[in-house]
Length: 191
Length: 181
Image (cartoon, rainbow over all chains, first blue to last red; front, side):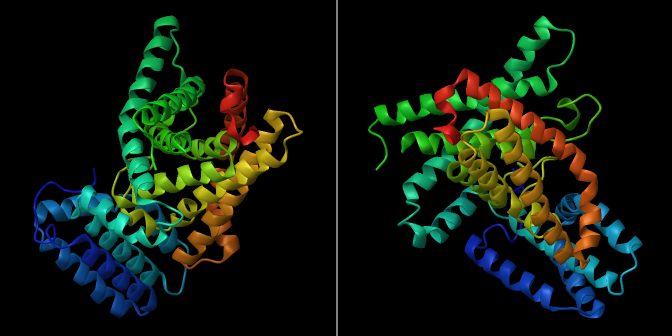
C-alpha cells in the first residue's frame, strides 16, 4: 500500500478535491515554461511536503528515486530548457505521489466508482466492484501458488525454476478463474 | 458473464504477480521483469477485448495506489513520469496481440502468438513509450527512440517466452485459450 499510515492534515481532505486540484495544478505545470516560474512551483511543492513533517518528506523523496535516470539523461543531453523539463517532471510526479500517499485506497476506489458512474451503461458498477475485489483478493493467492510451484521445483531440482514457473502459474490463474466463476454462479450470479 | 469477469480479474492479478517476481529470477543473468510478458499473455490467451480489459483493470488499481508495477512502483506519480507512454501502451499492446492471434487463426499457435506478442508487446508498446518520453522529456522522436533501444532485446526474449507459454496453455487447456475460441 502506498498510502502512508501516519496522519497528516491532507489525509481527511476529500479524495475528489485532491484529485481535481492535482489535475488543475498538473495542467498548470505543463503550461509554465520559464525556469523561474517552475522553481517557484518547486518551492511550493517542497513547502507542501514539509507541512506534512520530516518523515513524510523523506518518504516522498524516496518515491522520486525512479526519476534519477531521466534527470541524468536530460541534464547530460544538452537541451536549451533542461532546467524546466527536470523541474516540471519532479514537481508533477511529487504532487501525484502526494495525493496517493495521503489518500486511503478505499477512498480512491469510492471516488473511482463515482467517476465511472456515467459509464454505468457499458460498465455496470457491481461488475466493476466485483472485478476490483477479485483482483485484489487473488494477488496473494497467485503469489502463494508461485511459492508452491517454486518449492515443488526445488524439491526435484538443484536449479531454480526461472521462466518455467510461467506455464503452471498462468494455468493456476485460468483454473482459479473457472472455479471462481462457478462459485459466483452457485451463489446466484451477477446481474 | 461471471466467467469473463473472473478471467479478467485473475489475469490482472497475474500481471501484478509477474511484476513482483524479482528481476533476476526469470532468466539466468538477464535483468528483465516479467510484467510486460504478463501483458502479452493477456492478449494472446484471453484475446483482444478481455485481454485489454484485464490490463486496464491492472492499470486502474495501480493508479488508485497499489504498488503493483515492477519495482514496487504505483500510485498516480507513475502516470506523471516520463515512462507514462509505456503504461498507456500496455492495454493497446494486449489488444493488438489478442487481435493478431484471433485473426491469424489458420496459423499454428506458436507463430501466431509470436507475431502477436511482437506486434503488440514490442511494436505498439514501444511506439507509445517513445511518444511518451518524447513529450515528457522534450526530445525529438528519434532521440526518444534511442533511449528506448536498450529495452528491445529483453522484450524480444519476453515475446518468445509468451509464445511458448501460450502454446503450452493451448495444449493443456484447449478450451481456455479464448483468443482461439
